[in-house]
Length: 78
Image (cartoon, rainbow, N blue to C red; front, side):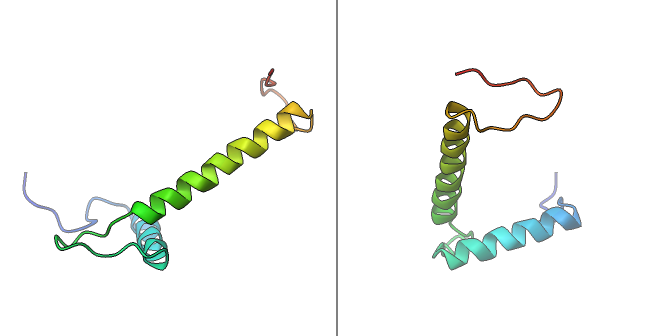
């Protein structure tokens, strides 16, 4: 297999999403490394933080019987 250009395998939507994620990573102080790759440490930390709090909030809603269920979706039992 030959070497592809950066992002050549991505659809246009995925390429735009990738660009937005890299730009957000730079806003969070993720920097370019010597090998011409951008670090994603801060982006990963922020994503993990947001996901953890979403799960925590859903658990809070479920425990307090405030979670709204759509028709046909199995109800959570804790």
